[in-house]
Length: 203
Image 1: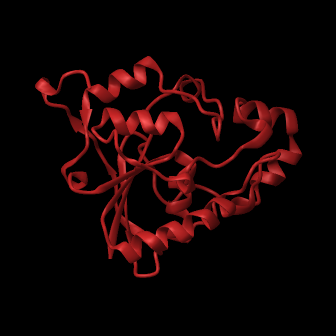
Image 2: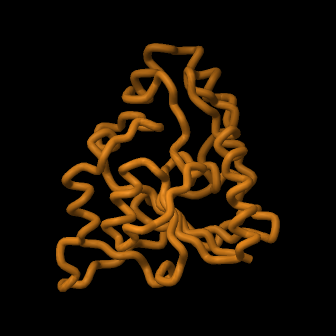
């Protein structure tokens, strides 16, 4: 059994505005950076090998939490939303109507225009998860909401239809157990970041 801890990047201007980010390389907002400077990783993550999505918002998050040298892992980049990046879901639902409703009703096979589905995200994650299991080294991944949702779906047998099986705090760490083949199950959800020490400076 191998532990995989996951943390979504901190706030960006687009996430604050509820815009779809996908592969668009948006940096953290000033507020997102300031919030991270007041926080630290929980003790569970202390000795974990760190990896990060190659997108700037995750690299910045890793750096501000003490992992500037985290290895880049392209397989944990955000789900590609194609032509819909920069837009809001509410706008898309209003503009596309029944077409969008039918697409969302596909669950794991929901596919943005020119983008990829959650099932496609899972397909690129699976070899990476198997590699982590074979290495048997606890790992902390700085990643994205779409990736963590896919891990949750796989861990719970959720088809991404209806309400999620658990409510996730997107500022917290979510920890999965990987079996020998890399299949995830839930270890601990919503593990909060902790207050940074007063002498931590402005890293």
